[in-house]
Amino acid sequence: MFKVSVETTFSAVHRLSLADGTIEPPHSHDWVVRATFARPELDETGMVLDFHHARDVLGAIAGDLHRTDLNSCKGFGAGNPTAENVASHFFRRLYDRGLTAVSAVEVTEAPGCVASYEFAAPIEHAE
Image (cartoon, rainbow, N blue to C red; front, side, top):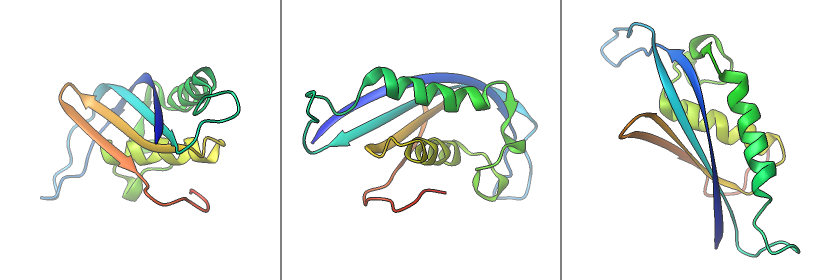
């Protein structure tokens, strides 16, 4: 399996609903997003995909979230924009924008705090 990854960053605010029913106060993070793409064979150009195109698409998705309150954005499960839900959001947006070789997305919310989303089977349609 051949794999490549691209990264981008964005800044955004969120507040989480915790398991005990409390709600965190709004706070900001400088999020780091790493998307990994995989193919069993290289394409006719000898690549998994074009780094520049993948980075541009990833950056555009991050740009839509930059300097926002993630709690007011669509696409986060149950309205709780956890790092896990942010990773899933990026995965689905990449897939929807034609980057179907996406295999995983990792999101670093804070140094040492990384969440990821991957889908092992092919997706018919991402929400």
